[in-house]
Amino acid sequence: MAKMIKEMEHPLYRKSNKMRMERFGKWLTFLSVALTAAITAAILFLVFSKGLSTFITNEGSVKDFFTGTTWNPAEVNSLGKPIIGALPFLVGSIAVTGISALLSAPLAIGAAIFMSEIAPRTGKRIMQPVIELLVGIPSVVYGFIGLTVVVPLLRDLFPGSGFGIAAGTIVLSVMILPTVTSLALDAIQSVPRSLREASLALGSTRWQMICKVVLKTAKPGLMMAIIFGMARAFGEALAVQMVIGNASVIPHSLFEPASTVTSILTMGMGYTVMGQVENNALWSLALVLLLMSLFFTITVRMIGKGKNS
Amino acid sequence: MSAKSKDRLATAGLYVIVGIIITTLAGLLGLVFVKGIPQLSWQFITSPPQIFKEGGGVGPQLFNSFYLLVLTLIISVPIAIGAGIYLAEYAKDHWIIRCIRVLIEVLSSLPSIVVGLFGFLFFVLYMGWGFSILSGAFALSVFNLPLLVRVVEQSIRNVPKSQREAGWALGFSKWETITTIILPAALPGIVTGVILASGRVFGEAAALIYTAGMSTPIIDFTNWNPLSPTSPLNPFRPAETMAVHIWKINGEGIMPDAAAISDGAAALLIISILFFNFASRIIGHLMFKKMSAN
Picture: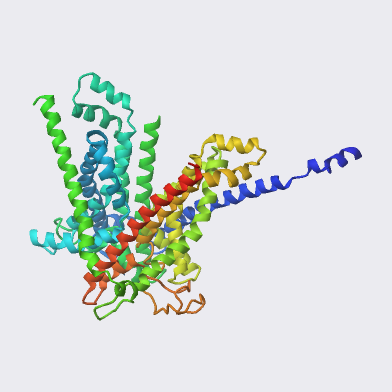
């Protein structure tokens, strides 16, 4: 027994410096990962707890929130509940996101087909750098161009002030176009070459090959690209806020001032006091935004999983 | 219609689409440059903005943008490198790790305004830093982290396995292999990614309006004591960046030349982002050349 203890004290049994460094390094790097994850958890927790307090502390009605059309959280209605009808903003956000996806998806996919199937060389030399550059342009710049070019143009062409869903849609579809294009290009390029060769060998034309083989195979990837674009459009705040007009009513046409969840959030947060109903109601809008972003992320993951299996 | 004429029609359609895109994008860039570059002058780049008069510049805003970027990188790069190393080298397929990965992915997809609101609540109010450069830098780090983690993880994964085996064969521990062999080999990729992310941070506004604030106090560029309230380096002063400035003067600017100032600032922003793009390409290329020894 005494001999055993002596053996355990032998230097070879002790932890070496290397071992200690190894442990230290592993823990240090794990802490960084854990920190990043903890930040996300903290964001989710804070937005949920603040966003739900409108309904719990201030007794706002969830039904009113999603169906009401009057936004005036400072006042209470006949039932003594705050007036928090967020429907106009939800309609605005969904309209702007949906229409801009409809506008930019065909253009983006067309550009991606062009870059990978029709003219790969021109695509690589000219289109790719341009697209990469445009992905990086700040959204404020898109908003500013929308304000100085798109809004006056719409004002001249259509009745109204030019501010509205149409202006927001145009700005957003140009803004998400580069993102969707580069993701769609990835999807199309990952279609194996052998499939294309097989299709051409069967005597199909290039367009038949693109339509029936390439696009079909790349469909999940293309869906992911479009949803990414929609997520970006839904969450975009400043560019939309600059051109949409920010009226909290449900617009009757695309050329009337409207508002989105993000634009109301951007405009209002500075003018309310923490803890009051007005402020909590805005956090509920932030919660809606967060839930939508989670929804888009989950959808993309589901499509990705389906693609791999 | 025969298959052949359909093919021709579709090809023509695609050319039209590409034409539309190129015209739009070229028009967009052209517009910003044509309207913006004439505004750029040394006076515009260095002088402070005016509130009621013409002739204001964007000097403090430009400085704030760079200062915030530097602070953001100081905070986020080390954490991202640590996290990237762990995810690429140590992480096993365990449910905790899978959860963490999902959380990081969620963070990367959060709208920047949500990150900004979190920063407002946590850094500005809870930590009591107020509207300050520090709050802004932390909020931007949160915004930047998931992207950087992905870049670092990918660069480390791209290092060939044989280099790892060579390290182990020399009797290096795993940590020594990582720090002395893998990290240097992954560095070109990491640096390129960091510079590209810088461009994104530089133009970000939504995460900043409620963290770094929408104003800049009068600052004295001869006073470099970080503790003095008029010093540009003081991390506790509010700081409006160029992107926020463009947004603000278009909403509530009352100076007569607000449009001209936005034009200039927009051009300056895009030039900076172009610069980041080129720099990342050139530096990545040079480092790759140096590392791969040919």
